[in-house]
Structure formats: C-alpha cells, structure tokens
Length: 459
Image (tube, rainbow, N blue to C red; front, side, top):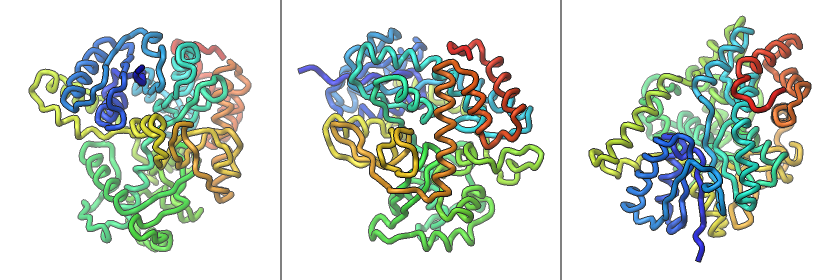
C-alpha cells in the first residue's frame, strides 16, 4: 500500500520547519507516512534530516524520511505540502520598516501597512513557482501555508492556482494570554509587577505559561482575518458560562501597561481583539504617526531582530548537541508545534476534529465579508478538508475594518502577480496609514526600487 507523502518546503529552518517536523513525528495518527524534507539550504537540510531520523527511531514513528534540494522530487506525489519559507526575513523586514519611517510611518511592517506590500512581493516571487510546480507534480495535494503574510499568500494560491490551501497561524494563543492576564487572580497566577509582553526569552516563557493556563480554563471562538480576529464568544471551558460580562469589568481595572491598544479598541468597539498589540496595530491607523508619537504612547513592542537571530543560533547549537549525543533527544519534546500535524491528521483520517483557527476562503462563514476572501475561522477537519464554522455576521464596524484590509490584500496580490502598477498604487492609497496620494506613489516607488533584485515580478 502506497504511503501518504507529506512534504515540508523550508524544512531546513530551525523555526517553523523544526516545529512542524517534531509535531508530525510525535502524532500517533501519522505513523508510517513518508516524510519528505526540502530546502535550498543544503547544510541545514542535512542536519534536519539527521535529526528527523533520530527522532523517528526514538519516538517509534515508523516514518520513512527522505530529503532533497530538488523541488520536483520533493513534490512528486505529495498529499500534503507544508510551506514555511522566507526571503532574507530579518534583513528585509528591517528595511521595510525603515523605508516607511522616512515618510513618517512607524509600523510593524510584516503583514499589514505599506511594508506588507514589499514582504508579499518578495515571498510571492519565490512561492508562485512553487505553486505552479504543485499543480504539475501534486495537483490534488493540500498546501498548508505558514509563510507570512498568510492571507496574502493564501489569496494568491486561491486566485491563481487550483491548489487547495489552508493558512495556519498560532496567534489565537495571544488571545488566551490576554484572558489569563485579565483573570490572573482567578487562575491563581503570581505574575511579575510588569507582566506586559516583550520580545525576550523570559517574557516568551511567561507568555507560553499564561496562554497555556488561559486555554485550560477558557474557550475562545474568534472570526475575522489573520492577525485581525475578534473574540465573538468567550466561555468558561468547564461550565460554558459567558465570560464577556466579567471581561468588561476586568478591562475597567486593567493595568495601563497590559496590551493598551487592545484594551482601547475593546472599549471603543465592545469586542476583544485576539492578536495582541504587536499585530493588531498592523491593520489600524492608530499607532503609526511619527509626529504624534502614537507608537510610543501605546508602547508597541517591535519584533527584536537581534534576539530572533540569537534564538535561531541557539536552536541550531541545540540541534548540533542532540546530533552529537551531548543533549538528550527528549529536549525536542519541549518544542511547541504550530498544529500543522493536527490539520494533516484531521483530513487524512477523517477525524472531524476541531481547530480554533484556520485561514480558508470565505464560503458564507462570515456573511458580511466578501465571498471567497481568505478569512480566519474555527473549523472541523475531515477528508474533504476544513469546514468552517459559520458565524453569521461580524459586528458591522468590525466588518468594515476587515473589508478594507481584505480589499487591500486582493489588490496587493493582483498587482504583484499581474504586474500591474496601477493596482499596487490603489492598494497603497487605500492603506489607512497613508494619508497623501503623493506619499502613496513615493513609497511604492521606493519599495520597488529597493527590492528590485528580489522580484521576479516587474511592476
């Protein structure tokens, strides 16, 4: 009997690639599959292959592990393709942000705002050929996309290919972190005086503990767009009690340092955002003004590029120690996965399993968002793929915020793939962080000039 083939594109990464690998090899419903690892980084791929073989033996996964830098071999006959790649991620991300800063725009520059256009263009230059290869070598495969900007990459797959695509993101965990912070006394949490989120090892450890504790006690049902979902329902996981009345009281007394933008948006719209201030600010025009210093006022924590590089280096050092036998393999049990393995297993084994957040085309799941746009919704997973759980309608002010971003996403993707500069300009002119048509033109031209060498698309 032919084995189910799962291919990981970007397997040589010590971040998403590694966590996906660990999840697949630990999952009981994925025993005996063929796992094919692909990356253009030959040395990184070699090490991850060795690690996979070691884990396979230790975990008793009975998986056949293969690897290659040759993409056609990796994709041929695959049933699932996990995509986790980036193009000079930190280097280019810093440039995206710095370019906008010159024009008075202080923004996170990853998935929303003008910097997201350049991020999307660079990644699609690499990803569109991968998608075309999937149509050739594994047209019936499911693509599980981790690559940011998730909704824009998924939109490109949906508009321009026949590939079945699911976008995956872990940001729902931040919602549980927020709830744990609000209900810290009830959960018996003894937190530092200032337990606000920071990009460092100590804060990340605290975040993981808090989000885990929040998930044990609460149930979030959230709908919207990736990094822009909203807690439509929050209940006690044991009793089913609606917790929104208590949340409203908690927010009145919340410390000023704890997710101040999130709390202010909640006070205005009456619905708690999920993603936390770092990502919420990507889609709203409230924190970008350099002149009014709104970034500082809301204490937005920019991603720490140096810390990220150091963390990645530490992970590679840990992998080396494991391969040399200096660190026990059980260390890999501590790796937090991105739940890709649960989505694969749910589809492969027809489990009808529940996932809190998947990014899929809107098929009436949110009635007041356009049909077909990529939405993030809870879903059930069976052999026909994810079946989104329908909400009905988002509160109309929230829907309006989402509609603007969904249109910007579509225009951005169409501009890049169709090489249409006029569509790109429209996307910039619609961006809520840009308040001057001349600025829209100048920013677009500077991004295109700066990243010309990265782009296969020539607008």
